Length: 472
Image (cartoon, rainbow, N blue to C red; front, side):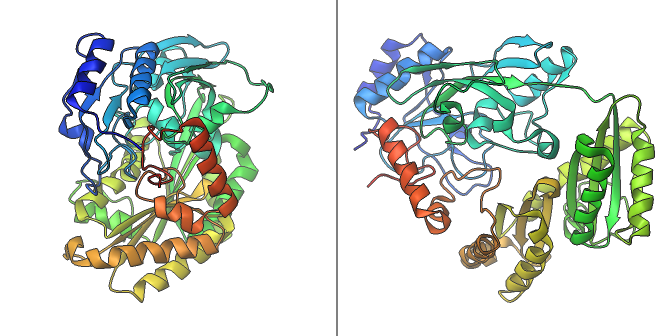
């Protein structure tokens, strides 16, 4: 049974840490981007080293005080806030931002968990390398949080999720022990894979304090295009055609819906529409090629073949870096436009690629039967990850549909599950989707997760309530 972090406990914690490490919680530590929950905390603790993190965890284990790990605060499933239960502390990794070392010839960098993704990108670029984990919040998201939820982003198609980019981790376990696992090896078959147990566990099994990360050569030439698709099925055919032509050089393949593009105007983003009229479906395609190949020529040939096959009807190929940036700005503005308009319910899901067209038709019809809603389905078509967001009619506030939210999400997730998909593709489970873990999860797998949690964290202090819910 957990106990609250009392003033006496905080005084003890202050005595065990350097001055200034324990302070009052700020509003940003108690909020999450979608405003679904308001968190609580007795204090924010910001250690400056792995040893200090271990000291904090040992103190909390001794007193049975809950710990809510906090990275950049950009998570979308409530994993970084604790709305109820005995008063915990928030453990912030904001001081631990160092790039400890980089080996360009090995394509490896070691970064502390508080390092912001954009900072790791800059360090890799300075060494002539690429760290490919990239998404809209990379200016504030921290690598520890990215690993905690095994985040994805726009480059998963070519480079994989956060898990695929990590060679080793240093972490503090629930008893305060330190796992020294910062390996730089591609091959290490020496027993259980503790690294991958911690990655994706959302801070419920320990606190990642540093990671050794894979780097890659920077593509010599990049090409980017927008293609108007006949329909999502044509998008899958286009993806297959592109990969048959240039193989793994397809860096990104994003799907944009006409609804999402129209939201850019409705939200007054000021961005110019690339096509008039706005098409129903558009693919954003990016190639990263060696210097001997011409990406614009490859994209032009791809368009011609796809047009002849009836897969695409129009297209634009970026002729400069600024135009390429403009194409990506459209994609990156869609989530912000969503926030301005206000969703009834948002979903981060994945499906087998061949099931996506059928899902879009089936789920759209099911939601239309519930009411006059609008759907913006967009995202990483290349790896099967869609952000499927449901909105009220134009001009109607989303709060009018609050009573419909649970029904909408249950409808979406039921269909996803029935088609062999997942209700959580890259955002994690957090607290938002705890019920879905039990509802849709394999019972044996859920039981194993609970047993691992009890074994490693018998007091239940690590991010209590996240992923598996509160202990009985």
